[in-house]
Length: 174
Image (cartoon, rainbow, N blue to C red; front, side):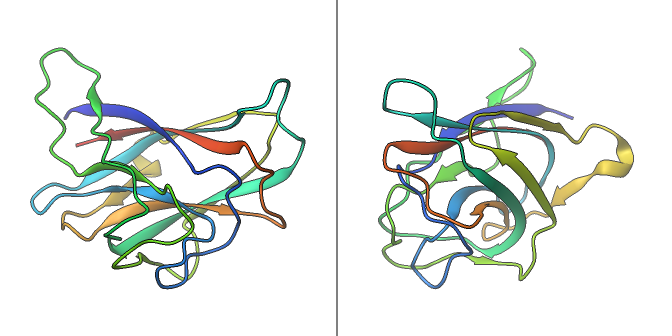
């Protein structure tokens, strides 16, 4: 058992809703499995950052966690951010890592996610949430396979203001 953690930031002014083809909508990104390595989600931290001075604009939103069966590819995606080992004796992260969107469209292949989220975490843009999945009965497993992953999707009634981004902190166990 090895644990890895990393974080990533969405594009500024992210709109909401499930992805459609190569149109991102609220698709923030995903943590991808590898051909021979799946993982368990162990912790998810969510908050909003802004490039403007002062606090983010107060807004209600939610982040849905979905199973992903087709990984996106092409332009509009940040380079994979591999997880950092939380124990000094642990080898490098064997998964694809966390990949976040950087544009409103993805160049070649859009993601395929489940019709409904496994979990929906509601919060306010001026707050922060830290959700642990640490107990054995709380397992949220992503099976091995290069197309598989857990996708994070911004849900809510309105687009985020310009300069506002969603920041995810993700911890997994392999």
